[in-house]
Structures are given as structure tokens and as C-alpha cells.
Length: 75
Image 1 (cartoon, rainbow, N blue to C red):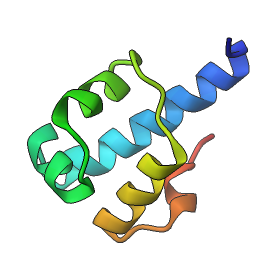
Image 2: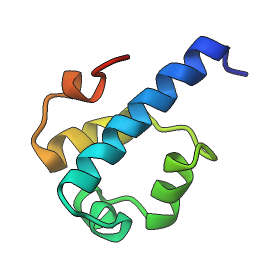
Image 3: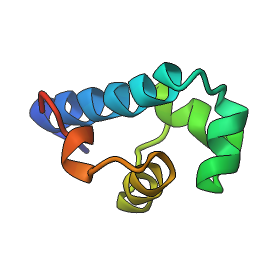
């Protein structure tokens, strides 16, 4: 079980990742292709039904050529 603070951090991190996806005008399908994740898993992460993993964060960083620290902005 996650604490309230852990949930808040995870929420901000997911929103930052989603923001990068949307700013690049990428659908969940395009994001899935770029990160080698299933679209269904991306939808679950973005809606809070699934926790994101370090691998998810790393793949996002590589796919969008952004430093991992930028994904943690405002966390």
C-alpha cells in the first residue's frame, strides 16, 4: 500500500509523462510504439489503475530524448 505522499508523487510523475506525450501530439498508440509498451498498459498508468515502473520512466526518457530529471519536475 502506498502512502498519500507516494501517491501524490506518482500522480505528478504520470502527469508529466502524459504532458510530454500530448505536447508531441502523440496518441497512446504512438507512445506505445515509441516505448514498446502496450497501449492498454499506458491507459492504465495514465488513469492510475497501474503503477508505473522505472523501466517505463527510462523508456519514456529515451523515446522522447528528455532527461529523466525533467519527468520529475514539480515532484
